[in-house]
Amino acid sequence: MIILRTLSETVDKLTEIKKTGHQIGLVPTMGALHKGHVSLLDCCKSENDISVVSIFVNPTQFNDPEDLEKYPRNQEKDLQVLSEAGCDIAFVPDEKTIYPVPDNRIFDFGNLDKIMEGSSRPGHFNGVAQVVSRLFDIIKPDRAYFGEKDIQQIAIIRKMTALLKLPVIIRACPTLRENDGLAMSSRNVLLNPRQRKSAVVISQTLKMALYKKELSVGRLKQWVIDTINLNDDLEVEYFEIVDSCNLQPVQNRDKPEIVVIGCIAVRAGNVRLIDNVFFHNFVST
Ligand code: AMP
Image 1 (spheres, rainbow, N blue to C red):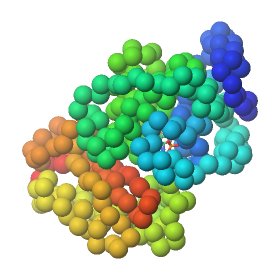
Image 2 (spheres, protein in one colour; image 1 turned 90 degrees about the vertical axis):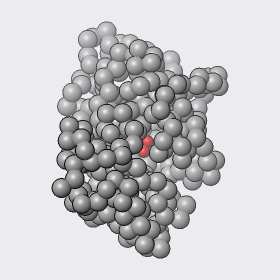
Image 3 (cartoon, protein in one colour; image 1 turned 120 degrees about the vertical axis):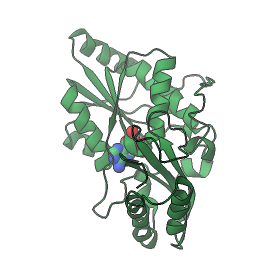
Image 4 (spheres, rainbow, N blue to C red; image 1 turned 90 degrees about the horizontal axis):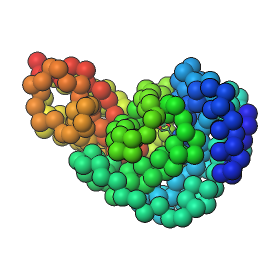
């Protein structure tokens, strides 16, 4: 595996690869890698000649300085994981490489960043768009891979790619889970043993919600929130039921043609966990 850190060595290497006609896939990450990240790399490897994984904890997407400071970092282990998983190139830039000058771009995402993660974490998606567009600019991938766990992020990146008219195909990959159902996340290591046990309630409740067909949208939302909040270690920040096409809130169970997603953010102490579930048949019984 090749490890690239500086702008010039990265641009030189990627230009050389492009010249040979090879297809390049990119998996952007913030490190603290787990099997979910490796599953994105596997998707990437299956569709491209060269797979690049970037590791960069992007400061512009953190609205909480404490969250940025405590974000888990372990570069040595990450590089070992990538090498063992068959990654071709690890791109590990520093902040000056990504932002040689401050990035003051403000993206207009319309309604997309006004709800859920957007309203809970002001500025977060603008920072995500900044870093991903910069990574696209440097790597110039043919395809880029993102996890459905961060479903709103995928919508934002698709919008950013369209706004900037970038020739990159955005691929969405399924969420990988621990054996008990908890969505894998770099933040899971920050949970204490009791919180870790409690956190399973999140995915369990989302799964049960699939079968609560007799409940209206409003009642279903309240049921999910109340069920999770019953656990002393957990506090729901939001639970929203949205149309998978535009991520706008759904009010009724009357459209069999749409796929609906239930998206949730939960606090376990200082740790923020997100997850979602797809309702492929949301009409009431
Ligand atoms: P992160 O390093 O947390 O910013 O995540 C990097 C990429 O990995 C994002 O596209 C995430 O959506 C994706 N990802 C994170 N957790 C999972 C998971 N459990 N399963 C699949 N993809 C994931």
